[in-house]
Amino acid sequence: MNAAVPSSSTPAASSAGGHRRAGPLNAGRITIWALFALALIVAPYVFTSSLALTMLSQIGYLIIICLSYNILLGQGGMLSFGHAVYTGLGSFITIHAMNMAGKGELPIPLVLMPVVGGLAGAFFAIVLGFVTTKKSGTTFAMITLGIGELVASMALMFPEFFGGEGGITTDRVYGQGFMGITFGPAIQVYYLIAVYCFVCTALMFAFTGTPLGRILNAVRDNPERVEFIGYNTQRVRYFAFIISGFFAGVGGALAAINFEIVTGADSVSIMRSGSYLLFTFLGGAGFFFGPIIGAVLLVFASVLLSELSKAWLLYLGLVFLLM
Image (cartoon, rainbow, N blue to C red; front, side, top):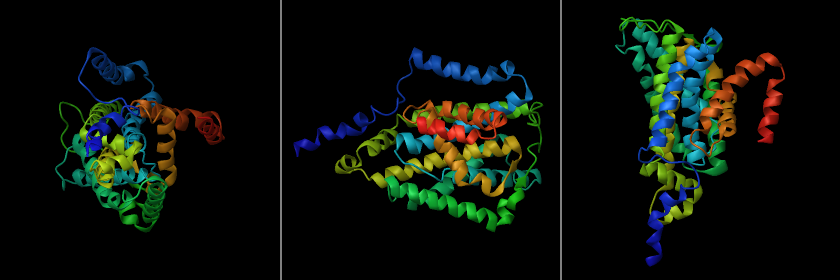
């Protein structure tokens, strides 16, 4: 009986080797977050070209998506091949909501559309995650792969919702502008993405220090011991899956707002999920801020490297093998 007493501290202790956790504010942490906010604010003034602004906007929402994926991979040890399902479905729900709002059928301003996408991502994570998180390890990965392929196939079977191969378009400029902000210019869209990027990053960092975040690290490291002290590991994975789906939906919604179009099967494809996996891993899945580096690398690879060589995917694969 006495052997079980020290084990009550296991979740906190077991997470020490994985991620840096949220803790009390100190000068160093305040400085890091202030520099992060400052970088988001001044970036468009340092990189002034239209291409740079487009890349910065893509980096902003991809940071959210890669960090949300790292809740599964880095913090929970869950290798998912279907994360694009929740970003893509969040994008589709958002773009339909934007079209309805443009017609006056839905009184939701554009600034709240990413929340709509987040709720959509969380909803589909609730529905699909209940089955997915029943298993862990390789079985979990194969289930996510199957669900990803299933949704990708549905994208071609239901053109009314997914728009077929042409996708669905929208106009982000609708309703009354606020203090001259219509979100027509790309710079205004960038700052909308930047605000959500900062807030979502802060919330996901705070999640790592919550009891759920701590026990999720313990489930990753030693699920048998976690069950021994009385926790339901499937429920822990399920709750983390829902939180990950919410932030993935927010990122997908911001992508829909940025491009004003969501394409069909491509948005939920296994290739899209694979890119999130690859660059989250390359950035550093074992460190909270690693996926931010991965998001930057993803944009540079897809925009710049693809312009330099037609065989850029070959070089990318070699880099992944080296890592």
